[in-house]
Structure formats: structure tokens, C-alpha cells
Image (tube, rainbow, N blue to C red; front, side, top):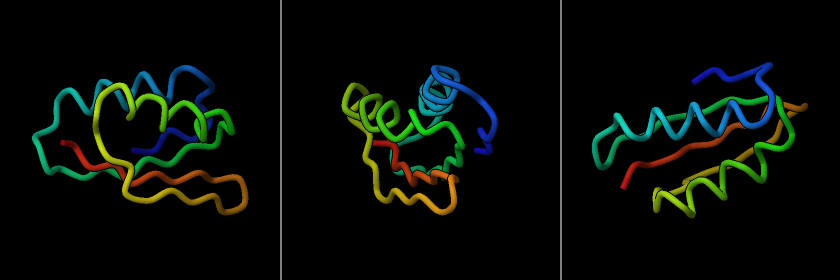
Length: 69
């Protein structure tokens, strides 16, 4: 999912919507530029119970690999 340029809370809301349409075991890669997603996405996953498999930050691009449980 390319969520570059979107500001809080839109990235977390879009990820929540995508997760609701996914099947267990599916993987998504989310790319964001809003620094607050470093807090928002992990908090969202604690609520949903889905797994954050990897997180990276390269030159302001935050990338999250999320596995649907």
C-alpha cells in the first residue's frame, strides 16, 4: 500500500480498512511518510491482533510488513 503523503490519522485508517478485507495469513507492505505512523501502526496492530513482521525507516520512508492473523 502506498500511503505516502497522507497525514495522521489517514494511514492507520486505511490500513485498518485493508486488514478487514484480508484473509488470515495474508501479507501487506505499507509505505508511509508521516512520522507518526511509527506510533500509530504498531498501536493499531495491538488493537487488531495482527502481526508486525518488519519495520524500517529509510530516508523518511517508513515501511511496515504486516501479516493478517
